[in-house]
Each structure stands twice: as C-alpha cells, then as structure tokens.
Amino acid sequence: MPGLADHFRNVLIGGAVGDALGLPREGLSRRRAGRLFGNPPLRHRLILGRGMISDDIEHACMVAQALLASGGEPNAFAASLAWRLRFWFAALPAGVGMATAKACIKLWLGFSPQHSGVWSAGNGPAMRAAILGAYAWNDLPQLASLVAGSTQLTHRDPAAQHGAMAIALAAALAVRCGQENRSVDAGEYVALAGAYLASTPMLSLIEDAVQKARAGLTLQEYLESRGLGRGISGYVNHTAPACLFAWLASPTDFRSALEQVIVAGGDADSTGAIVGALAGLSAGRQSIPREWVSGIVEWPRSVRWIEGLANRLADDCEAPVKSRRAAAMFWPGVLPRNMGFLVIVFAHGLRRLLPPY
Image (tube, rainbow, N blue to C red):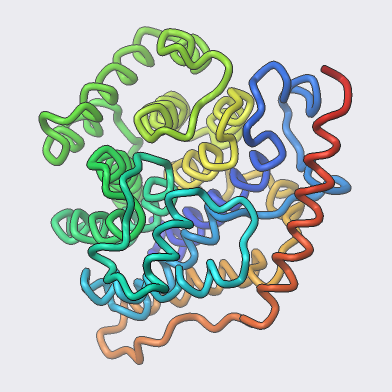
C-alpha cells in the first residue's frame, strides 16, 4: 500500500512531467503541434531534447510549502500561499496568466487573500488543486476549505472554484483507492463530485464526459463533440472535464492518459500537469517513464528538490509535533533561472514561427 510520501511524490512528479512535455505545445492547435513536434510516443522538445517546468508545477510546489507552513489550517494556508505568490511574481516568471498577474499585483498593494482575486474562470486554481486533494483526501470538508482559499487568491468566478474542486476530488479519490488497493471507478467519482458540486454546470460537464467515455469515445472525439477539436482552451469548464475524461479513460496507464491530452493541443502544459498529477496518483510512480523524469532539467526546483518537498510534507502529516517550517529552497537562484527560462521560451517561440506548417 502506498504511503503518504509516495502519493505526494507521484502527484508532484507526475504533474511536473506533464507540464514539461506539454510546455512546447502550449497555445498550438492539435494539427500545428503535431507538425512541429510529432505524434506519440512523446519526448521532451523544449531545448536539446530536455524539458523544463512552468508556472503549473511551480504553483503546486508553493501549495505544498504553504501546507507545510500552515499545517493545513485553511486561513493560515491562504495567508502563506499569498506570500509565496507575491515573491514568485516578483521573480518575473515567464508566461504568468493575466488573472494571476493581476491578483499578485493586488496582493502587493495590500489586498487580503480573501479579496485579491479577479473575475476569471481560468485554469490557475485547477492546476494547483491535485496536491490539495492528495493532502486532504480523508477530510473532504477541509479539502473544500483549502480549495476555496487557493481559488479566491486569484480567481473569483465560481466556475474556477468548481473546476478546482473537481480536480481536487479526483485526486482525493485516487489516493483513497490507492490506500484501499483498488482501481478508480468513474461512477464513484461522479457520485463524489455530485456531493460537492450539485447544481453546478461543472457537475453536468463531468457527467457528460463520463457518459461519453463509457460510450467508447476517444478524447479527440469527445473534444470535437464540444467544439474543441483544435485544442483545449484555458477556460476551466473546457479544461477540467477534458482532463477528467483523459484520466478516467486510462487511470492506470500514465503514458496513454498524458499523451492523449497533450496531443489534443491548446493549453497543453496545464492539461498535461493536471492529468499527469492525477495519473501519477492512480497509476503510481512505476508507470511514469523514466526518460520523462530524467529529461527534466531544472534548478532550483529540481526533481530531487520536489521529491524532498514531498517527503517533508508526508513527515509533517505523520508527526503531530512540527516546526511548521517549509522546505528550504535556494531562492536567490529563482530570478536568474527565470531569466534563462525566458530566453529559452523566446527562442522556442521563434522556432514555432518556422515551417513545417
């Protein structure tokens, strides 16, 4: 039976792999991305056959650190995450979403975590939700409070919170099934979502995705039925159901679930990070191709550091007497890393302007 450290490592490393593999395809249509980077089997294509993470997993790591610092108390968690977002934004990350950027500016201007969010239904809260589900899998009321606090920091549209809760509940179910040594069941997930998302558009979208998955549709066929054949947008009502479809169709096959959602195009780093996190939980670390993990070249948030963060969070959950100190990271290295990353992303963007079309 997997322990907490295994679950935390799987959700963070699985998400990091999905983020890194999807990043080169971000914003491209399915057809254009296929022309530039080929079809499965996927490999890292950002720079010289290597990959890097983006804001998706940076946010997940900040959530884990805020959980460490707060012990999971919702108000303390939101306050800790707010400070981390402030300094993350000050280090000039590349590709930050508009809603998150505005929220970070409001935080620096003195707005409280409860009032810093802007009206948006983007993917930000959903991309940092899986680690919350893995953390509070056996206390769903606490999970709902943590998701609300994480969401309100940056996004005020109720759809953003519903989408984040849908992903968090999926992660919680994956951990529960892992603890009980059984497979994830789509019907059980729909029932769980119904208890927390009743009468919301998100629940209807989840039910539709599960129904079409059971009917044998491929992810691409499902996306075309929703008018998303060119790619999955950054709107959470598009992203969350598509990610759940890919995950529930292949919960024990990490490669299949991840490749399907990444080649679909659109917001491929966020969809990759979400599906990678969920599939990492349900399929386990042994299912994540080693070359995908070893191909991530990062610093100071290296794979080794992320694994250490997961271990630290597990130790914190299992020991009642804690120092409430977050995992240390070499913060002076973040700004130069971001500057180098920006150059790589710019060069990559120029490459995407060239043939083949």
